[in-house]
Amino acid sequence: MLVPLFRTLSKLPLPVLHVMGAGLGWFVYLASPSYRKLMRTNMRAAGFGQHLSAAIAESGKSIIELAFVWCAPPEKVASMATDENWDYVQSVIDSGRGIMFLTPHLGCFEITAQQIALRTKLTVMYRPPKQAALKPLIEGARARNNLHLAPANLSGVRILAKCLKRGEPIGVLPDQVPQQGEGVWAPFFGRPAYSMTLPAKLAQLGNAEIILVYAERRAGGRGFIVRFVPFGQELAGSPAEQATTINRAMEQLIARCPAQYFWSYNRYKQPGGVPAPDAQVDA
Image (cartoon, rainbow, N blue to C red):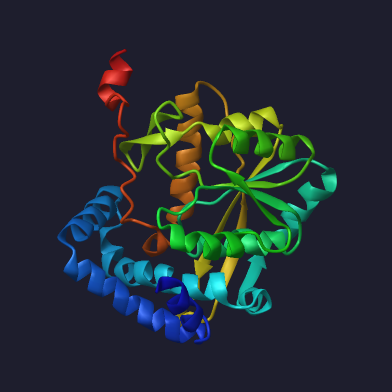
């Protein structure tokens, strides 16, 4: 049912979808005590509690707009996005150096890869959805034009590494909680978060330029601004120090439009088999 629904919704104007999404955000927030508690706790702990009302609406928009981003004709989707600072990205591409795009769950993160793929080949790490019925829809949307998918396993890591060595761009979502053995505890908005070590390893392995990117949702359903931001920091020290550097860069991006971050995600959960932060430090 969800796939036909998304295809039907994709025919509606984006402003209408965003109005519907805002309503959905408030419905979920009021209907789910656990969702409400997690969102409020994460935002207040990060110092953005004053943006709660806006974030509730934006969270619903982020769901409904997927119908447009995934199912609308690619040229229609592209017409609703504008790029900021692409000249910087193009200069790195022209130099022949590989690029690692780091995209947090901020704004319309699904559209960023599509926008990049309009201009250059891009390979992104992909984990299939838990609902098998969504797999053809998501994979079809994420594998358009120059956009290629690498599985979220060792084989996919090798694919990404080879892309960087060939001077090709790749994309990674760095603010997901990794599996056991694939991360370290590092601060994220002042709280220990189990954080990926893969981005730093890949960047160093391929001598890649790291570029941050996020798609800010414009008010009134007027589309998206895809912003490309230089990383501008050195990934030095231990894996935990490297993860801390990346987390800090994500914090700075999120602070630009905090209401559009995915605050309902349990970023601070402890994966099974992973020692608690204090236990790991003591060891």
